[in-house]
Image (cartoon, rainbow, N blue to C red; front, side, top):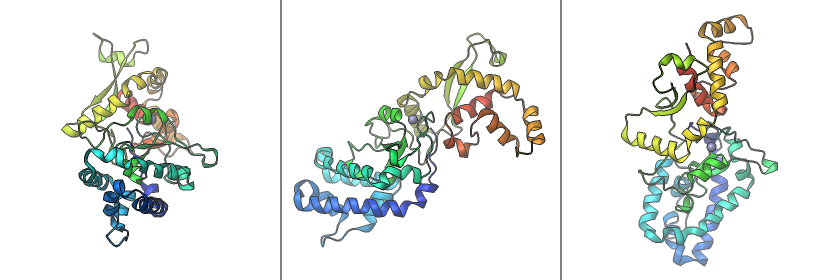
Length: 312
Ligand SMILES: [Zn+2]
């Protein structure tokens, strides 16, 4: 679970707001006239009694943070109770309008997203003229909270597999929720680790003839976070999927033995096109090993963690 960079999103926030607020106001004003029974509660949440848009509410919904979205969910739940999903389900039409718009087709490219933050196993590039783009995972599922279907910070760039595996789990429920990748990540709290065979010893880690078992250690001491991490590992099948990367693991085991600390230092020192040891490591492992850049290449956190354990 990798943090999604938000610099590009913040940079294009006004453009996002301009386009989506038009979609939202057209929709709500239409429903106010044609389907007041179902929609007037939400209409008056976003409009005053004279029919003027409450701009702050619009902004909170469309470009607000997770806390803003959470508070809107709480309010709308009070307004609608158990009828929420059925009464507001037609709001999903907004999502279709958004994804077929120019902005919807290129949004994650504008935002500078390159890999799936849930798994970091897939690139999620955009080719806007070829209908190629990451999937929009709705962190708060649009089936349960249709009014969040075009909220900027509810749209997580995701690979198809992660989007399917996450499904409609109710992330508003603290017991069920997974990591929110615009604000949270595994970082150094959750890490991949190789274990020697049973009854083996530490030196087996460096013996290429020994089979090692992959583990994901969750070292967080914060109770809620530890649970969100566990939910994420479980929901996205991370241990089982990463265990399939056995060839990558073998390559890292070999490379860490070849490229020792001294060798990397000499490479950095003796090659004019390598600036420092960090760059030498990125080149050797064809990765972005610095935590701030994990989002730029697939398997980068995985590679980082294995190198940390195996480097001598
Ligand atoms: Zn993924």
